[in-house]
Length: 79
Image 1 (cartoon, one colour):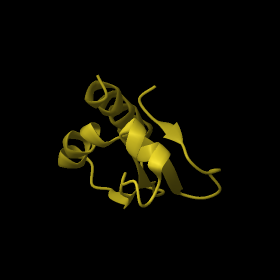
Image 2: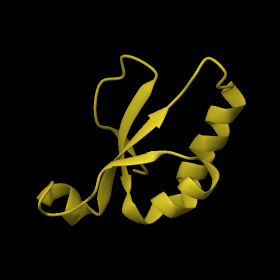
Image 3: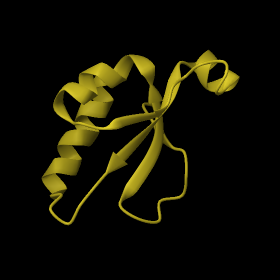
Image 4: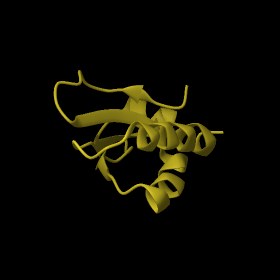
């Protein structure tokens, strides 16, 4: 699985766990924050799986095509 929601989505913020290796490629096209690094001190399970917690934000200006492009980039980066 390329990513998974880490928290319930209740607003325009999405917190997800994604492979650490996928972050640089995604951030080169889509700015976002790494919310929690995948270190044993933070989460031994996340570090063992090589995933980090990230925060993605949307706005009223976010288009459906933007979301489709982002999802395709997530899938490509996770391969």
